[in-house]
Amino acid sequence: MTLRPGSGQGSRRRSGQGLPFDVEPRSGPVVAYIDGGARGNPGPAGYGVRIEQLDGTLIEELAEAIGTATNNVAEYRGLLAALEWAKAHGHRELHVRSDSLLLVQQMLGNFKVKNEGLRPLHAKAQLLTHEIGNVTFEHVGRAKNAHADRLANAAMDRAKP
Image 1 (cartoon, rainbow, N blue to C red):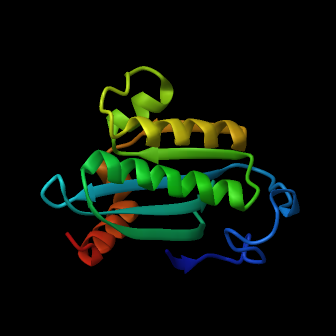
Image 2 (image 1 turned 180 degrees about the vertical axis):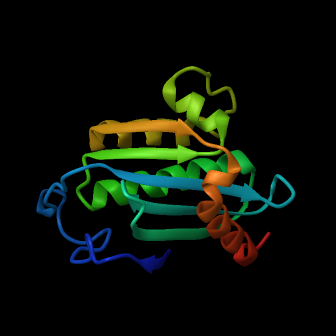
């Protein structure tokens, strides 16, 4: 669910409309701050994503309640939402910032994905990163991920167990 559109970048095409080759590639990278959480772990869960230009200008904010899930599943769902957004809007460069060390290290290939429930989400994320082209990952502290955390908490407020 899109909470707030940004300055109109990519607004002419909504996700799921048109054909993949209808999207014009965008120049320059964008930054996606992602977060996910669950109250109870597992419990009512949701994710938040804030997409920005490199200078910090808001492009779009996304948040979705995902029902009952674990924190790690919610983190991956946030990542997938960011990757799908970038692909749908024709971005070929994406820098992902997350406060989940596990997710970042798994996406970098430094940690194995041992949890069976995360494996399909990780595989889908890997596929999308290859389809986009240049996706980088950075672990950031919670303080630097406050906007995505706010969005994830709003989504969790709407989640039904």
